[in-house]
Image (cartoon, rainbow, N blue to C red; front, side, top):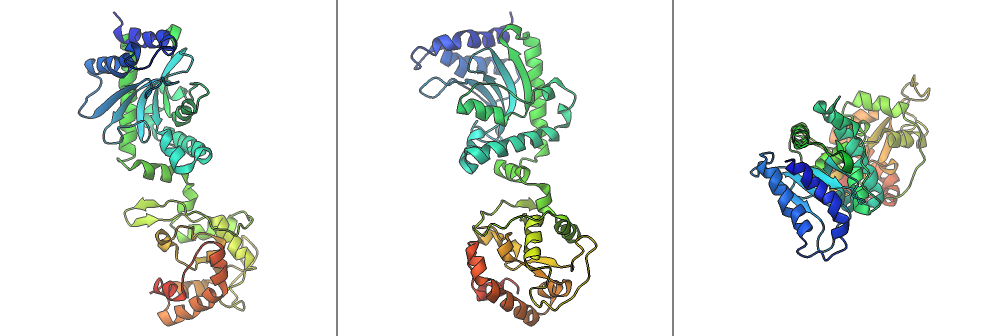
Length: 364
């Protein structure tokens, strides 16, 4: 007898009927919560030392989208955050999916619904590309799922990375269902290894941000600034973006377009001394200048608002830029005092409050 197949068919055939009845101690609710998860464990597919398996038909009331989740305990034990495998049943009970998914609730709480929806899609797409074993398999073909119109249904849809779809009239036999689960657990394991057990929030922060915001090579960054498009200034506090972690510590994002704006506002002149002449850039056909964060970007952790804003970026000739980084402190001090006195009110417009004494300490 095809036990697993019949179990899934039972849920699809009976859920909408049982949903009209009282939720408490309902036999089908218990079946979803306990019976089917236990049968998957009995098949030897789920090692309870490594994984947690949970079935849910709702909490106190019937869920629009019932599910059975398989969670690697090293990553998460909840469908609200982290990434996990999950069987998801559509609202009309015409089909169900086995999906490698991620916690929509975390995104909604962290970023708000609108930005969270955008970010979770970005992460889903980037995680999909990380998976070598996924390429050229049927699991890569299901790039989207359709569960219904409810908010949680749409959250699961956004969080879907890869998987397989089963329709009510074409549920495969137990052997194929079990093989699919084994294959998906291998993909889940590959994802875990590729992310090196990173904290879920760190994974998200690294993936939602453009790689071009984390250029560490200064020559490459200068080229990016010169080639960047010119954008309009928004003279207001800007929430800081999250950093990436490296073996050397935190790397804070820098947007080449913002630096280009700051240099353009200075008319491609050195803000320490406008009489300083460098050379004509082959790219911009204007005097070559370099962008410098007056409050150094590596102190971003101390500020709630972004330091990577035009109000905190000054245009310096190459000599002054090197001096403020590598000169003796008395030479640095003269430049910093001049720039600070000219920028103090502008910094405040961007929500950046710092005394001259504190700023000077950051250059010691």
